[in-house]
Length: 607
Image 1 (cartoon, helix red, strand yellow):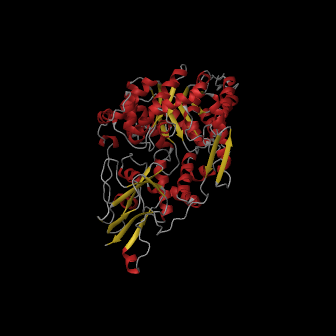
Image 2 (tube, helix red, strand yellow):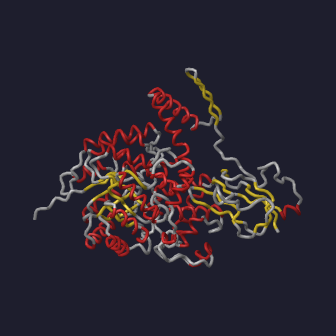
Image 3 (cartoon, one colour):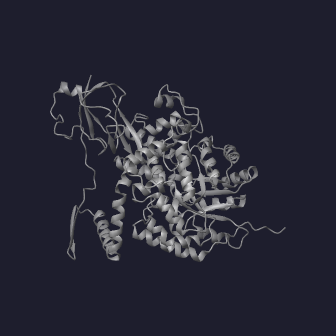
């Protein structure tokens, strides 16, 4: 019997997940536009260009409007459908948002050019994607459902099939298996895809990261089992913690029933282009290992491992990395086996770090972990252990309903607030503000200045680009050296570089942080007075928000367990509580100031 050709379709992730995985989402719009039309010529099933971390990173670090990025990309890519990653009720953020904001976001995203929405929920709680699917379908978009793959005693083939069937009942147009950690093995992929294929009759797609080195083999077995679409990236932004290369699969599947029909000649120019961008922006991957052993041993996605390293470096505790890796599976089991994908990867990872660096498990519990245990992120795959739940939220009962049912609409309020500040330029600004209020305000206030500066820089032309390259090289050389001070002069330009010692300063318990800190106190007084030290590195807040009163002031009596401040690290807010009843004698740190691990925050008198 003659085989029927079944060409495998490919979604290109180069402009979204690939650079999010390898370049910390630092691809500027000016890096995308010159090559966008060439990518459009390849013949992809779709091109992923938006969503995930690309929204808030554009605002936070690139000084770019994510909506304008999308409009500009759509102006260049006119033949191939554009795709985005939507975090269900989390939208593009790290918590659940109200339905009116989700609806407004989807309406504008469709209008701006998004054709395919890959919708997922970190807990595979389909209640958190139901409204998104409804709004996407109503607006004429393609709603792709998702099962987030992970390994645990409760994550079985049967569980994934049930999750998929419930999404089919909601009206999804296709289904994606999302292997964010790169732990889906080839033979399990064959079993999973075969089972899905027999149960549901919509196109199946698979998304794997190359962290473990298994992704190419996993894709091949998935193709044999009947998968229709695979996610790949251009070679220069593939492998490592990204996806497998497009070029590899064009070659593997050539002259088979699965031949892709994509244009290899266009891909050569694309890969060469991004190699040059990597060099220009110093984004080479020289320090990154090809195979991430921690993924194979601990099921930790590459991006999560990178975040853990950053957190531990900030706490001057990188030597505890192995301890944290061992703590993560324990925390994950206690919290009901959540998949390690945004935002639950941050929740589990940060709690594991806190458990290790404080030396006492669950002594410091971030708000996000408390809200997870309360059920505000959705239903955990398995029950949270009772003793852990009581340790974190006491006798408080977790919610049973869909989390967003408890949220009040925000769009009208956000519009009034933004108009009142005179910062609203277009409708999309209200959505951006409702998603990330503080970040959005900072961006809006400097938006016009950035545009003006951009025009001046463009007028100065190529000569400045050469100067920046030269300066960048000098900065890299000095930062990698032991020099504490360096002076350089050329063509009338003079620069002076100073850098701090590589070893972080040691902060002693009674360091003189403020002039009125008590340095010489009697033995009797020392028993009554104590400094409360920062348990981590981060940004200290004395107030819940900019508009509210401080948690504490000098002279007030503080009860045991009362919140006296918040330290934010890696977008996770950690409450600092009084361990016993005391009087607040002095506050050493101002609001929104950075703090170091072990740095004194308060001077208190025990009562």
